[in-house]
Length: 327
Image 1 (cartoon, rainbow, N blue to C red):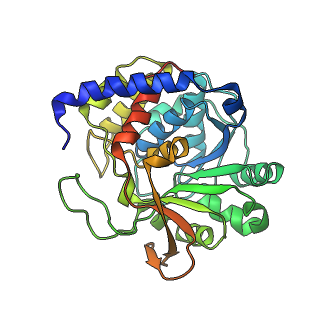
Image 2 (cartoon, rainbow, N blue to C red):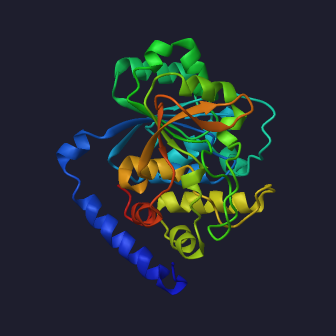
């Protein structure tokens, strides 16, 4: 059981531990940074923004590029551009994904995005495949949104896509579904948003043969409560200042999931890249049904699936990185 009056101490200890850890990153470790392409639908829910913030605060990860997915991908690209520019990371390439219509979720952070600069036309699928060809077996694809770009890349050139090191993804619901809080039972496995929005792309991914690390809603419904949220949004660094603006736009917009407490779905796979003990995995065979469920079926495993996360370790990493000086 977590006692609320111990939370400030937890934040302080997390910050101290992670600040010390970051100081010990050696030159050799830096030269072996994980190379990651991030495919994301930033701008609707707020978890994508927190995920990008953690990536930017993690010197072990080299962001090869960021590709935008789902809905208004041009506006999403402008949102990424603004966040990168205002946090000192404008050298990271941005590629615009395949636009879709009929997105049922509101673009809650559109006002932040509209003050971004236009991004040169660079198609996401071309960008992905080109960088995989250049560095076969080296690149991790971090898939944090509906899998439109991913499915299109597989359809165009499955052999090249197969040269990824791995796909680390947030998506699916395997043994439990969405829940209001940790104090109520989880629903049975649900249609999870990322998978159900782009079923064909998900089916292509799970039959591609590429190593998949899957973080479903079973393990990613980690909520950012008031103590941690206030510590982050009042911290005053370029990254946390950007998060404060986006968070308040998210709160101020109409949203069907209305809450002031974000669920950090997309942050969990980023934390796993930094420390796999955040989310121990189980090898499973996952099939994506035509109506958008991710079912556990018999057969040779095609994914390493995290069914429960270590929330204490997650917050050690998340809070420590975002409250540390910018790398």
